[in-house]
Length: 605
Image (cartoon, rainbow, N blue to C red; front, side, top):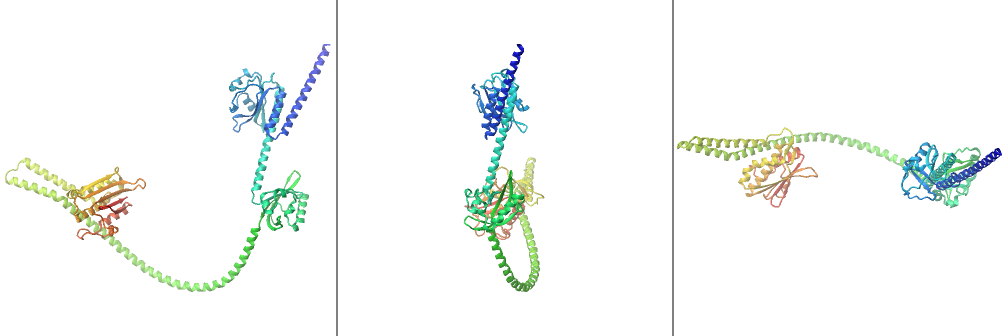
C-alpha cells in the first residue's frame, strides 16, 4: 500500500515538472517572439521583462543599460510591484553592491535575505523595500551592457529562477543588439540617401529587369522626370531609340555571365530628356547584388557644356593656326627690322658706356670735393667751438682776475702804510686761493664740452642740461633771465654725454644771440624733459620769448653756413652740427617751431 502511494506521488511530480517545462518553453517562445516582433528595444525589453517576472514569480523589477562611461545604470523602466518608491528618478544608480557582482562575473546572481545582507547599505533613502533580489546580465560580444533586475518574490529565488532569468537576459541582449544594428542600418541608409540627393551628378540604379530603383534630385533636373514618375519605369525612357537594343543585350549578357566589360569604366554616351532633347553625357557604371538579385548603378554627368567648350576650342585652334601662319611672315619682317634696331642700339649703348665712365669720374671727383668740404666744415666747427671756449673762459675769468687784482692792491697799500698783520695777510692769501680754485674749475667745466667720448653710455638728460645752465649762469643772471624747468623722473638716454651737451650749448648760444641782437632783458626760457610711453622716445624742449624765427628762414636754420648774424659773430655751423650729432649719433631729430612770443627747439631721441 505504501509503495503504491509513493508511486502515485512520483507520477504527480513528473506531471508537475512536465507542466512547468511546457510553461517555460511557452514563455521562452514568447520571449523569442518579442525579439522578432518589436523594432524598438524598449518595447521588446518590456515584453521580455514581463514574461521573465511571470515565470520567476517576482513582483517588481526593472531593466537598465550601462551608461556610456560605464559608471552607472540608466534605468529603461521600473516596475515597483505596487510598493511605495519615493526615490528621485534623476538620482544616479552607480555600479555597486550586488549589481556590481553581476557586471563583474557576467552571470545571474541573487540574494534571498536582502534586508540583512551587506548590500542593504547601498540602497538610497525612499527606495522600494526589497525582500529578495535577482540580477541577470545582458551580454553583447562578451561585455555586460545592462541588467534585468527582479525582486520581492513571495518565496526564495532558486537555481531554476537563475536559469530562466539568464535565458531572458540573453533574449534582451539579442533584442538590444538587433535594435542597435537596425539603428545603424537606418543611419547608414539615411547617410547614403543624403549623399545621393546632394550629389551634383545624376545617380540612377536599375534592377536586372531594367526597372529604375534609385533616382536622385540631380536626375530629375537632368532628364525632366520626377522621382515618382521615374521609379519602377524602364530605364529606356532616358536612352535614345538607336541605343536601346544594344543596352538590353548588354544587361542580358551581364545577367547571364556575371561579367561586365564596362563596369568601373567611364563612358561617353548620349541620353534623351523628357522633352525629346538628345544630349551628350559621361557615365560611370557599377554592378552589385542583393542576394541573387542583380542591380546596376550609374553616375551620370551632363557634358553638354564641355562639348560646347571643346567645339569652341577647336574653332579657336583653327583660327589660331591661321593667325600663326599670318604672323610668321610678319615676324620674319619684324625680325629683320629688329636686327637693324639692335645694331643701332648697340652703338648707342657703347656711347652710353663711354658717357657713363666719364660720369663716374665726375661723380667720384664731386664726392671727393664734398668730403673735403665736409671735413672743412667740421674743422671750422671745431675752430669755432674752441673760439667760443676761449671767449667763455675769458668772460668767466674777468671777474675772478679783477678780484685777485683788488686783493693784491689791498695788500700793497696795507704794506705801504704798515697796516698789514698776520691775520690780514692769511685772509688775503685764502681769498686769492679761492679765486684760483674757481678759475681751475671753470677750465675743467669748459674743456669737458670738447672732450670726445670714447663709448656710448647711459646718462641723465637733466645732468647735461644742468651743466649748460652752470656754464651760462653769469649770462642768465646778468640778463635777468627766468629759467623754468619741467621734468619727469630722472630720464636717461644712451649715447655720448659731451656731444649731447654741445647740442644743448649750441641751442643756448642761438637763444643768447637772439636776446643780444634784440636787446631783450628779463627774458624767459622754459625747458621740458619728458618721455613718450607709446614710442619710448625722450623729448627735450627749450622755448624762449625772443620774438621767434621768421617763416621764410625757418626751414634753413639747420643748413650749413646759414646765419643771420654778422660774419664776425658766427659761421652758421652751430645748429647744423647739432642736427648732424642728433641724427647720426642719437638716431633722433631736432626741429624748431614758432610760439606766440618766441621759438621752441625740440630734440627727440
